[in-house]
Image (cartoon, rainbow, N blue to C red; front, side, top):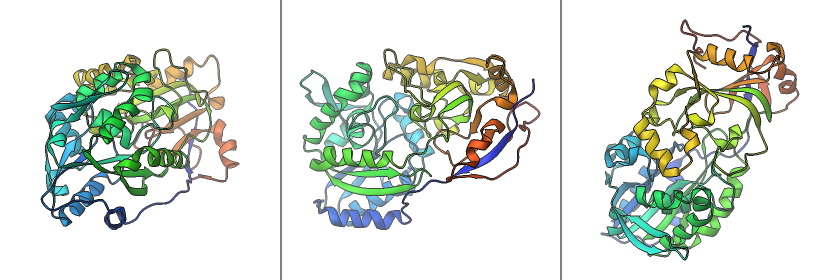
Amino acid sequence: MNLPNVVKIKQNFSGPSISNIEETIEQEFQKSGIDISPGMSIAITAGSRGIANIATIIRATVAEVKKRGAHPFIIPAMGSHGGATPDGQLEVLESLGVTEAYCGAEIRSSLEVVKIGETKAGIAVYVDKFGYESDGIILVNRIKEHTDFSATIESGLMKMSSIGLGNHTQAQAIHTLGVVGIRDHMPDVANIVLQSGKILMGVGIVENAFEETAHLEVIPCTSIPEREKELLAYSKTLLPRLPVDDLDILFVDEIGKDYSGTGMDTNVIGRLRILGTKEPEKPTIDYVIASKLSEASHGNALGIGLADLTTERMFRQVDFQKMNENVITSTFLKRASIPIVLGSDKEAIATALRASWGKKPSSIRFIRIPNTLHLGEMYVSESLLPEMQQRDNIEVIGDLEEMKFDESGYFLPF
């Protein structure tokens, strides 16, 4: 079967970028006026997301705590990720560059929690045992839109203080209620944690469309709920999107937890696949192909169920124990469903074309992206080229050419 010709384009995004992380963190600590006394034991959270400069941000936070004579240590705060095991969490942090040697602080990994209260709805509230036994906790997380719902509080410091800081136990308690749990009850759990006296501050991170740190802010504990709403709204103005809202085929080179908590960002591909939840109105994509899993995901292929087709290479990469632990905790089971498995990228594209009901390759609306986080450069089919040429923020950086595969039928590197 003939395949559509493609051309490489570049999307030009706008937005601020912080060049000196350490200097910005130092200035933010000085401005905050938050009291950290000599001798205090301070826990600093580290999540499982692929956040730009996260290791540097945590290292700079550790340094500021040490300047004040306190004793910082790092705690994994990632719910059920890392296979819901202490060693698995350490493995995830190491893949993100968050190590004791680099950050200059001990990492204390445990799934043990302490119950500190209960919401009005009867949901128990937990805090990591090491964090609870410290003299104070500093939350560190990126503030961005969530991949499961839309609200004034989505993914950020509030989520870190609840689902993250409460480890697997809290993640299960909230996720058992589905979308209602994370959208409506997660903020209530977070507020109890913030009011417990254990949280000193939050380090809020906002990224631009190039996955660069656009904004860093040290936020006093009492200001986190309202300030996070403002930073969430700001972050949404900076996020990247596909250049068009309707496609026949979207080809994603790589999915993984380092690109999105759902493997592929649901806001980019326009799919939630959550029972009883309406799908986004756009973008509309007939077929999504997921080709392989990132090494940083360590076999957790959550999000493979958001695709319609995948490859034998991807299937062989799946660690079902890790993926199942994560998806069962979330209760969004369809996201771990295995789509039709084809022998190569070329076979997967040919299959999607065959299922496009008589459309000619030259008319197919096709885009190939490296992952759903990096949307600066991509390949688009010839049918999309006229639209791309009319966009001021898009630069055509190649010539129309045939798709190029290796001898096994997989795409050559981007």
